[in-house]
Amino acid sequence: MTAPLRIGLKLGGQDTSADELRAFWRIADDAGFDHLWCLDLYAAIGDAGPDRPIFEGWALQAAMAVATTRIRIGCTFSGNTHRPPWMLAKLAVTVDHLSRGRLELGIGAGYEETEHRMYDIGGLDHRVGRLAESLECLKLLWTRQRTDFAGRYYTLRDAIANPKPIQKPYPPIWVGAGGDQTLRVVARHADVWNCPGGARRLPNGVIEMTPKLADADRRLSEICAEIGRDPASIRRAVQLEWNGADPGVLIESSARWLEAGFTEQIVYLKPPGALRTAEAAAATLDELRALAARSSPLPPD
Figure (tube, rainbow, N blue to C red):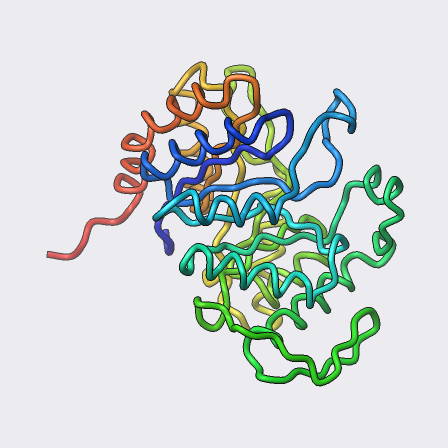
């Protein structure tokens, strides 16, 4: 294992209240989880339909920044089509400063067709190209005093973006990707590959990797080799949805993904009962971290 195991906690921001979110964040911060996550969607997702309540993702991250003290914070898949890169760059820097340098920037190409149709949000037809250009713009805005960029989808003209991020050169970038084109974006730009799918639940409740995701993992390594990047420099992330009923299920799931090299693991909880489940997840932290100790080679004498 080339990266340490880090365990996160996620309550998306839909079907919940502001008070429950604040309590959830306190549990995660006090318990010692490594990172804390929300969703970035304008309409609820799931079988119950889009009309359920859901809060805005970057406003939540700003609130998370001031409600916590040590845990790192992020949004698992901030939809690139939702905002132009200059706006996203400014939002991210604001949260990075509010959190005193604890932001993890999660981003994806955009995928929810319902909200794009409802609000007439464009860009899904060229989502991968837009994502690649947006990441280029973000890095330029975060590292240069003035920026020019002339792309197919975005243009910057002598653009100023101050202040710069606290984290240098910029916050860690998590890119959600599954197909070959988006894996190329991961290889070029990401610190973390955040796989958006590719998991299956066994009859005993344990979550394991599918052959399709294993193939994507191998493909990412091949693409890295093509462009001269060390595949080990990109950490792998997975979300493990858990209902709190059986700690053994969570521990076994974590162990399987850790063995596959997924060292960034997010325990994804859903209402109702998210606070109870968060407490149960916190009680497993020592056992989860012991998995990393057992999987690490012994130091030389």
